[in-house]
Amino acid sequence: MLVSELSPRGIRVNTVAPGATHSPIWKQSTPEEIAKLEAAHASTIPLNRMGSPEEVAKVTLFLASDDSSYVQGAEIAVDGGVLAAPLGAPIYRQG
Image (cartoon, rainbow, N blue to C red):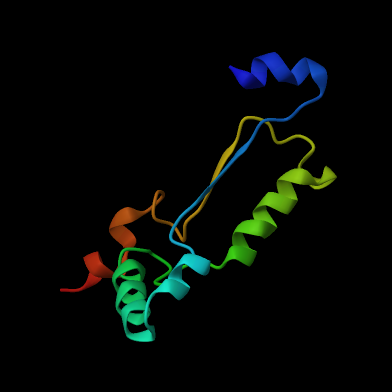
């Protein structure tokens, strides 16, 4: 709906949907707790790791740049493959 309304004004509407990402909130935990949480999250991510804020920022910068001038109405998951291939996560590959 926003795409239809805002496109004539030259405004692009896109969404960045980050998955499990290291962030300052993790600093509230002990190193042992962080390692345990990270391992649990990573096992559910096909790339087998959590993302970094820089990785999410790079996608956002791309959408804000002229390089994405023809991208409109996109939702980009920056989640290591969770939405695209949930059964490809390490937790499901273990036999």
